[in-house]
Length: 162
Image (tube, rainbow, N blue to C red; front, side, top):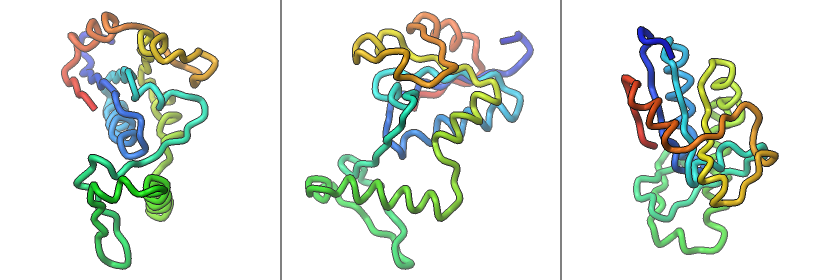
């Protein structure tokens, strides 16, 4: 990171399909605007760095979730989240919507981030805690702890927590 280049860091803590989009979209957009961008994946966000992604959506605790359906918006109340199979249905609906609208997949966004030079840091403590192996993870990751992230973030113009 040069002293004259604007920079951005993002802590990524969530690993669901709907929470995967914001950090990758912001990172690739920032990089395309000339920012030095760092993503720090920790706790459940680390799942976004696995080689094989099987991301899901849950309605539970997501009171703002509305899915376009037949010209209306279907609201998913929390009580629906307790029904067997609802997360699978919500995930299928979201993946269908993403495909219909031509939105890039998370795999594509990860690749774009790497091509744009986004620094991808996997939290080593979380790797150890959840017993992940580097062989489980995508190529191109840096493995480091909180101190490395804080050193980077302390120099950034923009710091986000997602």
